[in-house]
Length: 458
Ligand code: PMP
View 1 (cartoon, rainbow, N blue to C red):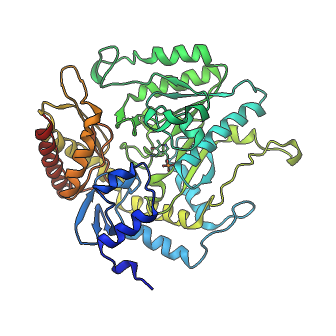
View 2 (cartoon, rainbow, N blue to C red):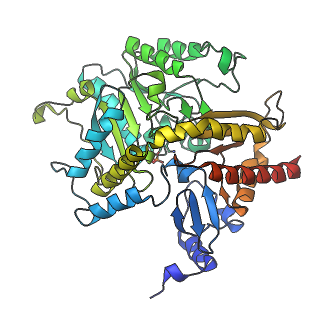
View 3 (cartoon, rainbow, N blue to C red):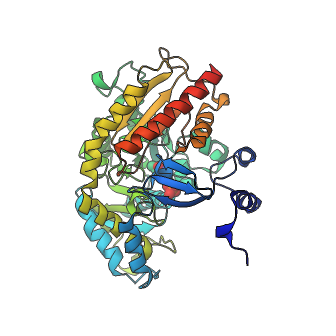
């Protein structure tokens, strides 16, 4: 028997490339940069099979909330492993999943009360869309068949989720397969069409969504948003007030508001859930990623009694939500979520992260704000994004064919930093446990990688 744990980087890479089609990748790029074989991870550090360390400032796709192999979570999963790994979730339940709901409820926007579990973010979004559609039908409003979403929004990769996503990079090729959603022009505070900035903004861009509600409000089942922070769009941050406006429009037109907190939940924006910034309760909310701290695949679609009640009735009334996923409510996932909650509560993690947030931002600003190719540094919670531009005055971006972000990504990797950028936007979205020392090291490497690549292309 081969011992794969004893194999060299080269051997494992060769076998990997023989079999594996990696996500969100042009596999030809792997000829030059084969997959780095990670053997272990502790805290913010990943270690490859050769012992080289990488600081994971992107939380491995934004899900590693409190550090790799955090003992609070590993012990909780281990404890569950010998009791029950999985059980069919129709007609059965178990203590960990009940505990997760009972403990999460106090952090949720007031009024959210019913949890439907799935195993990834896209699935939670599909569930939200179906729930919204069926809700309207069952309260006798069957003309509502469409969905609204914000331009440059991202909600996942399955067909429904892609339909309410607005990023051509992911969806363009599939357009013929997608639902005909209404893509509302989203706030864009860096390139504001009204030439305002965050300090002097009166949410002038509300006119776009107001117009779309006037036109399509009566045929729309729900609008889905990433509250306050459009992650995949490049960590675009917009004012909470915009969400208040959406809530009012939804109430006026009878449209449901879906808050997709898959990326923003669990303290990423400084509040436990980003909706709190606006003090708005969505009708449906989706969570994943931070829910299990990145340890197990788990997601939930959470809604109100009002929506739940529209699905409640005699079996033969055929109003049930006949939606299921095999791994719905998985006990190991639930035990990971319990580990995360234990850690957050016992360590005041969010409070500490919020104390560190302005310091981290200052460290990044001190290093980069006078750079002539940095158009904006935006920050919320521990998330900091630096938008690289060709011309600071006009905000003209570099030619995407240069693949600036990929060049910087590769340089940073060489130097031990996992800095997977989005377009020309470099960002930190580190675990909430990120320290000043780790920040200092990360910023130093980002600086070197940035300098070396920009020197080459300018
Ligand atoms: N919604 C948002 C806001 C996301 O950021 C993501 C993933 N980045 C998803 C949905 C999809 O989640 P998953 O990748 O688990 O399907």
